[in-house]
Amino acid sequence: MAHLSWQRGPTTGFTVAADIFPLTELTPHPRGVIEYEVLVTDAELLEAHVGTSHRFIVGDRVGPFLAKIGPLMQVTSTHAGLGLMRGEPTLRGRLEIIDPEAAT
Image 1: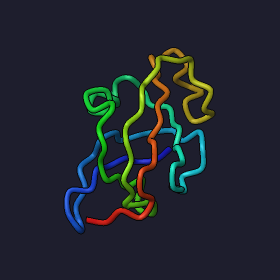
Image 2: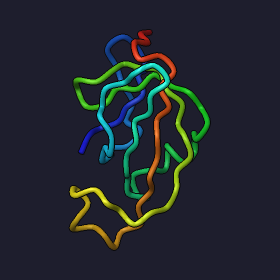
Image 3: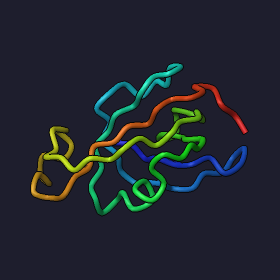
């Protein structure tokens, strides 16, 4: 589980999704992708901004990096961290990396 934020300044962030559940490595690479699952209840901002690019920070160790929010698809979760919430509506999404070292 990880916290996903938009970078709003050199030292500030804005929460986009309090809990995402990564399916791929959280190391941004040029033209790479970070795939994740998120509960529908935590995905309102992500859904509203599909197709837009932002500087992201994941947790307190990854980022900032520039990425585009890819499509979100409703799925039955496969992430172990969502095991107790299998009945909850879940989305699978992706962050499409544009610049793995984007700073403000």
